Length: 344
Image 1 (tube, one colour):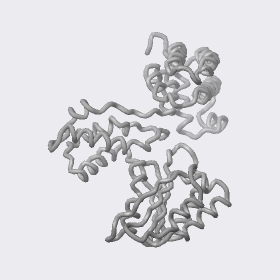
Image 2 (cartoon, rainbow, N blue to C red):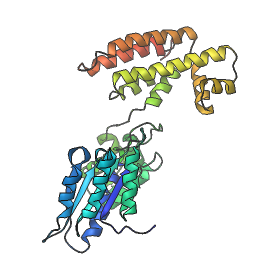
Image 3 (cartoon, one colour):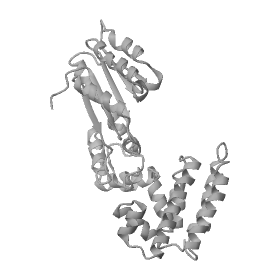
């Protein structure tokens, strides 16, 4: 791939640490041996192609140039005329100035085609386009070690692994928001360095200073409900407090309905391949749901479905109310419907 030549950049992905630092390389390239560039940070919803053009079109007479960084450019390309205006600004960038876009991706939703078109336009113009992935579950501790070495911070491998766990990197589900995990890891690393100046950070230091920040997973919660692991379901439900109440109930309803449908088919002696065809499921989710359905009786599933009506009525009054009310209502539904008799 040819090195970038235009004063443009597009930095995107689900790693906020990497994405927010993406424009650094562009700024360094444009500055060369001269003074560093001034940075102007705009948001896609709070600016326009005209304002961007004004800021990038004026060359500086003294000092460094200006790098305009636009965060979340989606509103600027929401319609074809708007996208055309934005792309015209590429030609307006004066010598010594630059224009960069940063686009955070949470991994849970399909990206608009207009953003891909903008990304491709930057690449076609000779700009720098890079995607940043959040460190994986297995790679976060190594990533933390690398950031520590960059900063001259000593940390043992065991402490790095524990720090990775504390910021939530060990959660396996794919539907969690990992955008801020690496930023959180670096912030905690720098805090630990102040605690152990000149020394090596050990697991005991991480335990003492770093609180667990485990992200919520809708899939993990629904699976815990499906397997009737009430204690785990209650804990995971608390981490989903930012999910709108109505959506929370809709997802629960969908899982209980699936379990009822599969329980009916299993009771009728339906084979696995026929269950897949009837419910339009792939092999893995069909097998997983069948395993969950076997942990329930049909009366228990029907009672859980009826209980969701009461939960829905309770949560509809949650807006403007206390979080304690929501948690209490969800915990009650779990206790009454998910917990097995004599179980947890």
